[in-house]
Image (cartoon, rainbow, N blue to C red):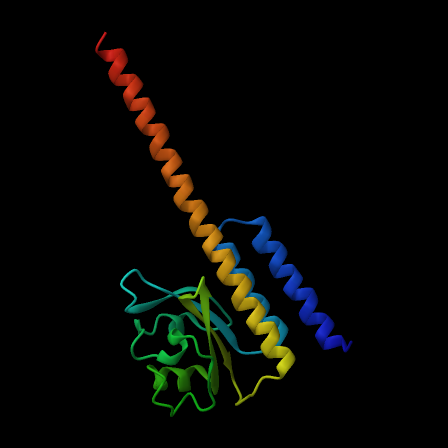
Length: 190
C-alpha cells in the first residue's frame, strides 16, 4: 500500500477515535476540518450545518481560511452550490467565475481556485455540507474521494451523536429540576 494511502488511513482512524471519545460537537467538527486540510494538503475546509429553517448554512467549523472569508455573509442554501443539499458531490473548478458560488469576489480575494462540496447526511437527510477549498484548480483522486467520503460519513454520525447527547442531557437536567420543584412544593405545603 502506498505511503499516502497509509497516511489517509491513519488520519481517518485518528478522526474516528476523536469522534468516538467526544460528545462535544465542536471537537468532532474540528477534527474533521483540520484533518482534511492536513491530509489532503488543501487551502481550507469548512463544515456548514443547515439551520432549523433549512434556508441558511451556518459555519460550524473551519480550518485554513481567513476570518474575513468565514464572516463574508450569510450562506443561502438556495444560492450556494445547491446540488450538494440534494445529495450530490459538486466540484467547482473555477470558484471565481462559477455562478454556483454565492460569494465569487470573496473567493477570489481569499485565493480560492476550486471548491469540492460534499453532502453530510444522517439516515438519508442532509444535515450539512463539507467544503474543501484549494488554491489551485484540482481534481481529487479516487483514494482521496474515498477518504473525503469517509470523513463526511463519520463526521455526520459524530454530529448526530453529539446532538442526541445534548438533547438527552437537557431533558435529564429538566427532569431533575422538575423533581426538585415537586419536592420543594411538597415540603412547603406541610
